Image (cartoon, rainbow, N blue to C red; front, side):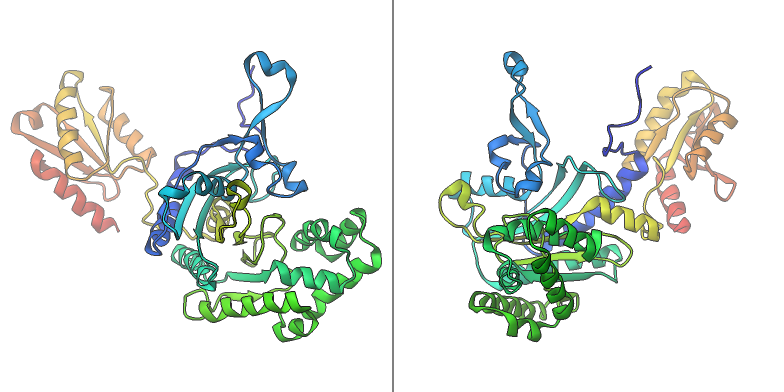
Length: 440
């Protein structure tokens, strides 16, 4: 017998899952649009060459590759891949449609991505990202606004204990230099440092040593992170000229963010790395206390579009991880009690199969009133039909028998209050809507 569970790291979305997902997406989309971001969608499949070499060596290994098809299948070679994130496809789109897009292009994108990663709590191989990006300006206003947009989105979802950590890639480079880590090893060091929250200082030290970084340098780097922490002024005194310039950029982001909802959330963290290699400037990550890892992250990536276009285009963005948000909201009971948990507001029931056309007509009238209506398809005993509606949590049952058809009425049973009233068919919808309001 064939297996019925989904592939490892993938999920089936049952009705309640989808209702919750659509609720969260709806909130995020409305907030993003309030900030002037426009919607964009890209294909699930990209050319393999589009993705390879953009994320760093370790991330390249997590790309789901698609083998060539037809007569080329036996070669075992791949030419396509499932998209790894939404940022590289955005960069490709900007390069391809540059003449059709505004000079300052602000877009949001909410779509699934795929990574051949090890599944864990809140981490899947297929998951949704909710991205917001602005391209065409180097101003720190961009960083402040993307942070404010994601801050507003999380606040409207009910989060009140999150922190937006901020650092700068060039500032990190300056700290790596201060720890005597040679420049060719900077990239591999950052991949290890990015795991600090997940595997701790000892785990990062071991991984850096495994990657060819000397024990003394690894220890020195971790000690610098421990001593400097979130102390911006102490960090500044350590930096070289390039690091100081990066520090001033971070200060400018703080100054602009103070005028937005993100100001109270922003916190400097000199150890924040972000593992993707395309970041060039300020980097961000959102954390809540009861989740290992982050709810999202992002940063400035001024050189990525240039890999496709041949010229630099300034860009900065932030990505929220939908699955992790859903996990935390479910565990904390954060979904609103008014969120629909049933397939319908009312179920249409008839006594006799020959009366089903009348039932369908009344169901249409109820739908025109704005109600969600489920029509019970079989002429079972009314008790059985009512029991079915109750099992689905449907609060009202509209019952149509011979007397109602003759009189142009319909009997509405309130399953919560265990009462029933008979209404003119044209007035029944309004009565049920009023009953739903009273239920809250």
